[in-house]
Length: 258
Image: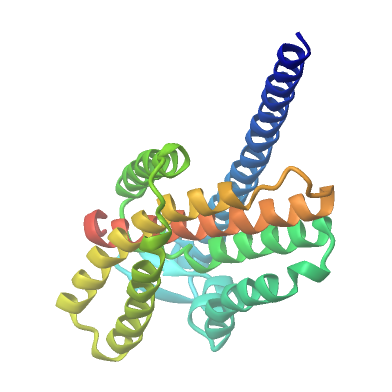
C-alpha cells in the first residue's frame, strides 16, 4: 500500500512539473513571436513612412530624378544619395553586434528598445524596395514569406529530430552568401545575384527551423524574469533576421520590377 502511494505521488509530481514546463514554454515562445511581430510591424511602418517622405511624383518637390515620373525629395537625397547612405546601411549591422555582445549587461527594457530601434532602422534602409518593385508584388512576396516562415517554424518547434547538425552547414552557407554578396557588389553580375538569392532563400529557410528549435531548447523553467526576457529578445532577433532576409531574397527572385 505504501509503495502504491509513493508511486502515485511520483507520477502526480512529474505530471505537474511537465504541465508547468509546457505552460512556461508556451508563454516564452509566445513572447518571442510577439517581439518578432512587433519588430516586423515597426520595419514595415518605417519603410512606408520613409518611402512616402523620400520619393514623390510631384516635380515641384523634386531634388533629383529616380526614373520617369518618380523623383527623390531632399530627405531622400540625404538618406539614399549623400554619404549618409553608408551610415544608414551600416547602422543596423552595428546595432545587431552591439545587442549580441552587450545584452547580458542590459536590462530587458534597454534590450527591447535597442531591438525596436534596430527594426526601425532596417525599415528605413529598405524603403527603396517600394521604388524598385511593384507594391502588389511586395505584398505577395511578403505573404508567401510569412506562410513559408510559419510552416518552417512550426516544423522546427514540433519535430523530434535534432536539427543541431544542420547548424554548421547553415552557418557556412551564410558566410558564403556574405562573401558572394560583397564580391557581387563590385562585379554586379546578374547570374551571381540570382545564385546568391536562391542559396539565400534555402539557407534562411533552414535557419528558421533550426533557430526555432534552438530557441525552444534555450528555455529553462528556473530562469528569472530578466534572463527569460533577454533570451526572448535574442530569440526574436534571430527569427526576425531570418524572416527579413528570406523576404528580401524572395523579392529579388520573384518581385516584379517597376
